[in-house]
Length: 237
Image 1 (cartoon, rainbow, N blue to C red):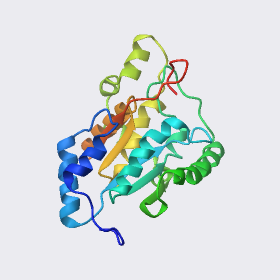
Image 2: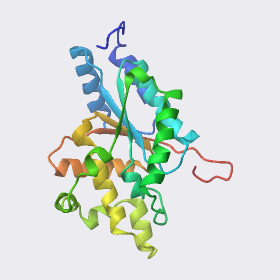
Image 3: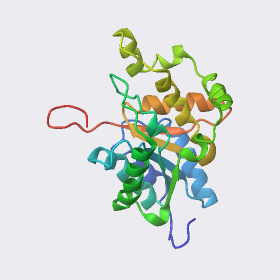
Image 4: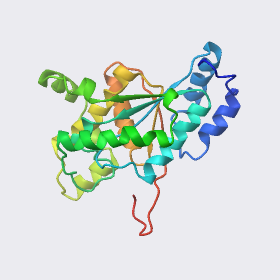
């Protein structure tokens, strides 16, 4: 138990808070077991959330999952906030009808700096660990990338709604986009979070990452998607 924390709420109270506002918990039974272990061992859970810094500002859609992370912190747990500075240069294909424009390293690093400053408008600094996925992705060799790619199949990738729609409409899908879920899967290695939280269509990325982690001999983590916020024009923001 973290110093200065008087007492963690019991399992049922924690689950009531965690369920609030989420579309689904995969799987709820596993999360309950993790919380029971946390209470028994008096150790906080480590919950991951992260964004690729493809724009200079965290927008209102980001705050949906950030507020859920704050709820975890209020329950006594620790948040690992992962800045996807390396995957940001690839571009998340989730929910996209076309390939994202690639950003330069300078653009991504400039955006990442503002993320570090903005997240603490919601998250508690003393219960937040900030990390960057370039820490383990940038040193990878071509041999490492080949090993990563060997654990995924095109058929598996095309099970994703976004990729299958583009394939059926003869829209281009780059090999780089296929690598994105596998790159995200490597997050589980150095951080070892118990849970990932994402927007509804990004759940396909979490799912792909979980599959890749399982193929690599890693324990599959929990995930929970949220519904997207919609703008005045009924377009996803």
